[in-house]
Length: 519
Ligand SMILES: Cc1ncc(COP(=O)(O)O)c(C=O)c1O
Image (cartoon, rainbow, N blue to C red; front, side):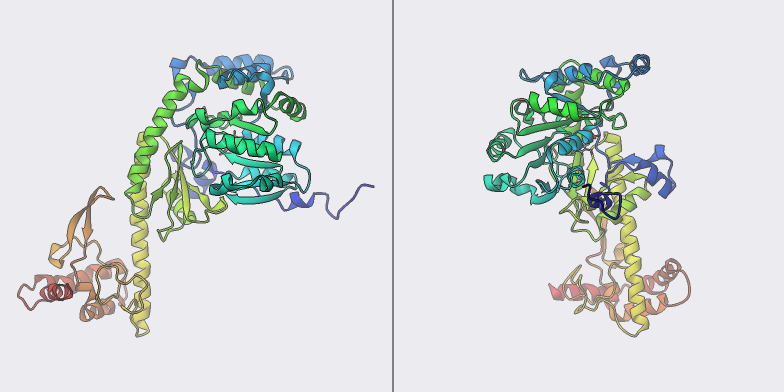
């Protein structure tokens, strides 16, 4: 008898969470009131060299392809998709791969779903290393499979017994979002273990053409029922809206998946466009893809070098068209940072949805030099803005405390002590006048290799750390008025007279003496 629950939907579907992706241009345009064309999207990772249509030298004519496709669109597509499958096989350029090994997909995401549908029964286990692309989890949950998470670093340590508990292990190469590119030799060892354990090694090679196609396992997938390879055309040809991908499998497996897939999963335009891209002379080593890889490597290293100079930005490996950045040292978390960049018209990928990364990481795409320069400049803008707000916030706390008769950030209680030098009488986090730019305070401009330019350093200035000065400043700041105006007034009325005193009894001399005594 058919079992009926109290709800028409299956339990696992009712509880399904949507997979989070980048590329939310429309949504952010509405949210931040910035025209879509002014938004720079660093949150989706596409080939920065542009589409093949952007390069007339490759002879692809979109209008011609569209016109041919329109003629065919009056009939149902030939669902054997031989033109596309033959082109995909010759693109991979391996003697053992023919169209019979290829499964066409409406984007590679469809291939992940199809594979899970065809392999997983309810309650089956799968291994998903983390952090990685979110679609494996969603597609497995749709089949009501049980997920075993393992850290990506430990996949080669999995024993045959551990592997055999699962029906599939998903490996993304290069991995999204870490950009770690695994070596073919190591993967071959894992593939052998998987075959013995009767666990399918599912290789997601969506970015491999933009990294190093030599590391692909597509030729192994063609011979081995326990290796499956998935490729995407949307990344390497920079047309995610067209939705194209394919799977590579042994003839047996490919035949079964081709029978199970949606009958007409590609439109004539998709098939024609895909076949045209995949048929560019040289396949994975076409002039277009080689130039793409050269550009990506150069730009990824440019971004890595520039961003490594920013305090609290630790970019990961530069192997492909995106970089993962560890921002855990900064007080601004990934979601707040993404929102601030979006306010400047730049979308970055907040990595909060990637298991294991929490709010400590962001991912950025590698784009053209001009766009990458704009990104680096925006980093400075975002942090200057944030530092100013943080200083204002700290100042308000200090004032609130002063009102209650206490002192904020006493040397003994401040979590940031000593931010400048031992022994200071702390009151403010960040001087409220920073950067004053007046060398009479003892401050000076220094060259920063991180910022690649001059920055104001106030390490020799003791003025806002002297109790009598601080008390006057706090009293002044308590008066009615805008903080900015009050600060200007205080500078004139409290600080300038100190700076203008020149004899040895001045506070400045006193400050220097304190500092000298401390050394
Ligand atoms: C690692 C990885 N695999 C597969 C996909 C799916 O791409 P598509 O369905 O556009 O081919 C993506 C998209 O972001 C991805 O990052």
